[in-house]
Image (cartoon, rainbow, N blue to C red; front, side):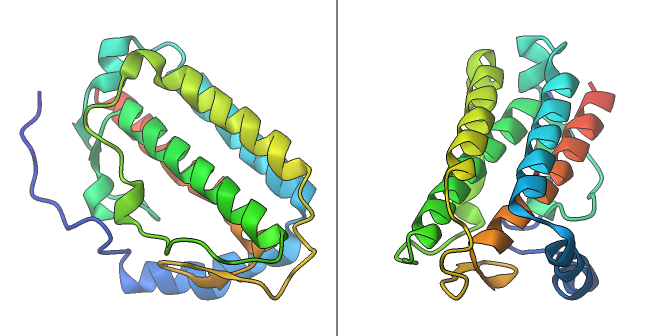
Length: 193
């Protein structure tokens, strides 16, 4: 068991240059090229790759925390997680994002404020069931979001803590890149097991 490292507080954010690159270049370019169908395909592909990466791990390995280098898009406070914690984070975010998409597509943005701190996983994640929970979240996300009319209310927006006000299509376009960041995190954790 590794000793608890001294990391930045949850919600501290990304380095300014990285935040600016994502906010003003990468995300706007992704929005120009991403449709609802392609965003859902990308999300499913990332989920499949995550499942492939963790499928051979034992319950013990899933629960082992490892300190990794800070990856692009990964907050410092998230560098000492286990694969199970990372899956738990993706489940929390996936479910909350599905709620955001459902609410925005109905023309409302009446939601509790989004918080980075609120989507951090527990250290006490149940590693024996986490893969099945992740599979279910991914399946539900794709099936339920496919049925939503995300373009119905393009001016109704909800604030992301780092990237500001986003409409339903923008929130969906953000889903797969978020999965990708944490897929890379999982692979780095696995290298250190």
